[in-house]
Image 1 (cartoon, rainbow, N blue to C red):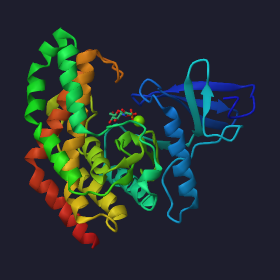
Image 2: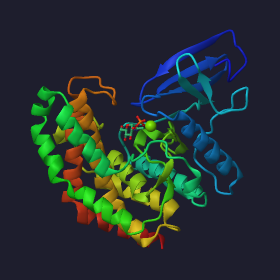
Image 3: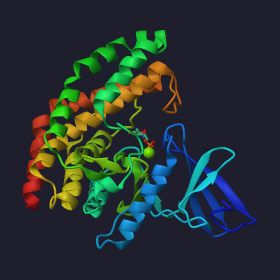
Image 4: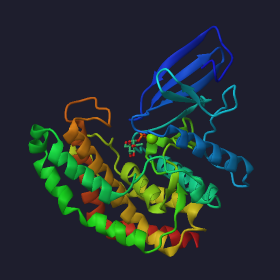
Length: 351
Ligand code: GN1
Ligand code: MG
């Protein structure tokens, strides 16, 4: 903290829980408070790329005419957006702590869905004229389902025997869904444009004002890199549309809330309809299936190798997360016509 701000006598640190990957603290200095975050370098083996991207995005946002919803990071005393602690190898970043905002694990009202989706739409819109090639790939093959499927195959070969036995049925279902990998290949080879994507558009990465549920900021730019619009729409669909947490074990509680879905589509398209191509528009719902499938593959592979990536708080949590994602996929597939019509209806209202 002293390398971001001059030494302060009465500084207090509080742990902020939430993300699966990085570690976050609220730091209070008298009447000022900050959000201090340490990057997990086991996941991000080249953290410098995150900071280069942050700088590129922040500089672009401050010079562009469209306002970006990103939460700016603060410079250290040496003028960087980071402080590297050589002893522990941890890279730190700091932002102002915004009072009166919060994030949610699942959508409670259509307004939250609309506002959060508007945030991610605004994010895409605000970087639409920044060439994606200006950004570094912070994690390679992050949303590549062929690679994620292979990671599951590897986990089935080298993972924990007793866990592989417990997950047999779930593995079978994931293999049945392998067509998602082929469909992804068709989409990306058909010439979808690369965009500056956020790539981690779960609900909790948007801050909303507590009192009004209005959009405040889009956070967590660790995975902002070149991608397809279907990734950002898809991860929203995965996390916004079923009103339960992603580790809910009671699958009967996982339902599709079409009102929240429509609000999400409305909010997202309001900000993006001017530039989305027809191909992008027709890829959106597939994005929901793709991103949910990716997470199912990743949670299960992690379960099989012993929970090395995603922090867990109860036994077999990563298996529960996988089953939860599979239930969502079934709902998306069973309601695909309706989901598609909602996109078309909302798009035509704006055109
Ligand atoms: C991780 O960093 P966090 O907790 O927002 C993951 C995402 C997953 C998400 C599932 C770098 O996000 O891809 O969708 O968990 N981020 C990384 O909750 O792997
Ligand atoms: Mg993240």
